Amino acid sequence: DPADISGYMKPKLLKVFPQLADVRIDYQWGGMIGIGANRLPQIGRLKDQPNVFHAQAYAGHGVNATHLAGKLLGEAIAGQASRGFDLFDKVPHMTFPGGKHLRSPLLALGMLWHRLKEVL
Image: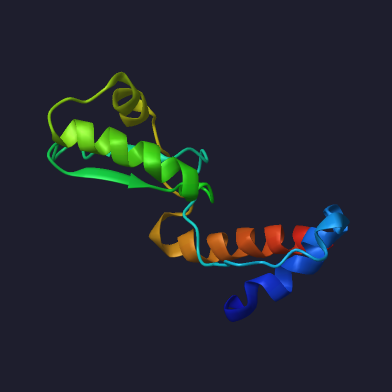
């Protein structure tokens, strides 16, 4: 249940770190994450509309990666794109396999597979 992430995660955490049994969890959050096929953040601009910038698909690492993405995007929007922005912008990103008809079923199957691996 997303309303009780700590109740779900704390037993798993204590299996690895039993010394944290008496530590209170002050903040919790959960939700969907965006993952690209190559598991790299997608930071860049649209090729056909170079004044449209994007930053997405942090693969669960958005808490730290968004700070870098914000800096890179801000510089690029100001006309001062850095080498870091250019490197991310040149990374090729594959579309999800299956086209528009199989994309959702294949995605659901993949998510189920990874969920089963976590449970087992």
